[in-house]
Image (cartoon, rainbow, N blue to C red; front, side, top):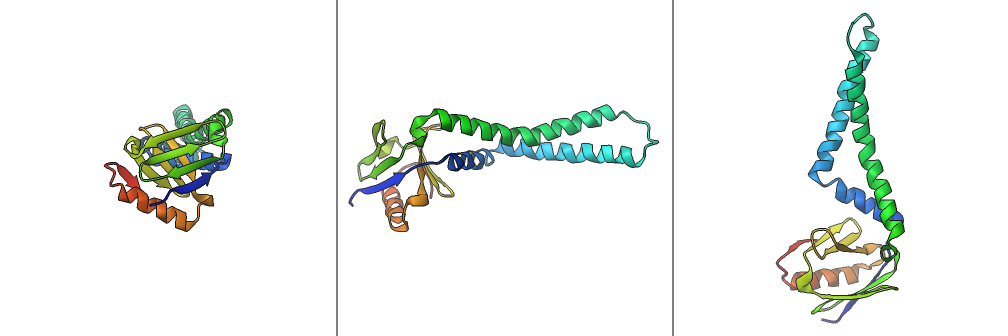
Length: 174
């Protein structure tokens, strides 16, 4: 099989969207978000009850605290992901470069403006597609990011066939 060349450039919005999609598939983020929404609803209901029935003598401070805490969970997580993603993208010049990926039977060669990298298929930890982004994980945390927006269907199908033909003993979600 001949080499497959794919050119990819990742934009800031693509990177932020990718981080949101990856983060909100993790169980802890989902639990924290659901907990935040529940806290806001419960505390909001208690506060509304106190407004409707003003003669009710009760301590509003605990309901206010729970409401604010729940609201903080709901607002903080997406805000933190957004600003963290912006910071990482703006400080890492390699993420912003246009890269050429060359896939062959023996491995993957990545060429950017400021770097050259090459590794064997055996060094791939996991391959995952998240919408129009293909992630080639080198370990649990480090991945090469390929924006598939500019990749035509023929090249993507050839790449998919190549990856599946390698019969790698890894997780593959294409």
